[in-house]
Image (cartoon, rainbow, N blue to C red; front, side, top):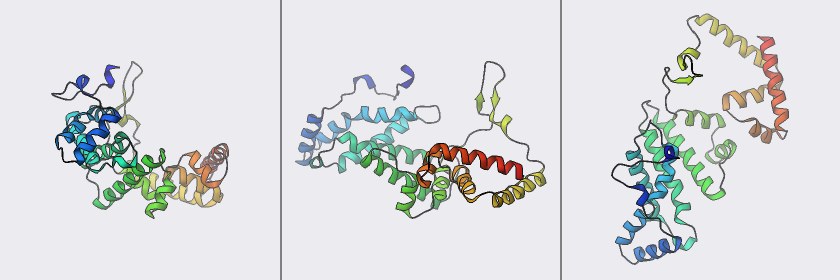
Length: 257
């Protein structure tokens, strides 16, 4: 299990105190009455919560010391705005704020420069997803997000994809003990531009000739990025039917091309 441990410089994470719900409420009462030392106790008593969240980001891409500091900022924001009269646990309220701060830091420090408007849209999408998750306990569907923000489902996929970390073409993607296969090995040769252009024209013509439902499912699957289950819910059919229609549509496209 050691590989799941988060190491933070200068902190012995094994000795961090964890506050009980009763202790947390008592400290919030003290804080409300003007005892500022109670705030420091609340922060120190919830550092393990920050560490537990950082486990999902614990890889070589990110500096864990930096992420820890950012996560603590999210924890402090949660403590500053927490209301014990609502009957919630601090952890329930704090988790989305901590995750939000960490994700925002990662997005702002990506090596790829993304349009400000696209970033802002991605922030709104993720904020709504976090708020929805904290209320209902599940992630909203793309349709829910699109309706709330008055945007298309394609815009959701486009905005979120723009925030993904870039991958080196020399990233190893497979190794069975022999020669390693790198991403570059899987990239097609695009020197013959005319061939690609002809293929694109043929694909567009083929899409116009297949059935409307087949076309709708292909666009939903491979452009918008929906799962077969999400499409099934939208169309009111079973996932097995979606799979069958998708398979037939791909086969028809191949024949037409």
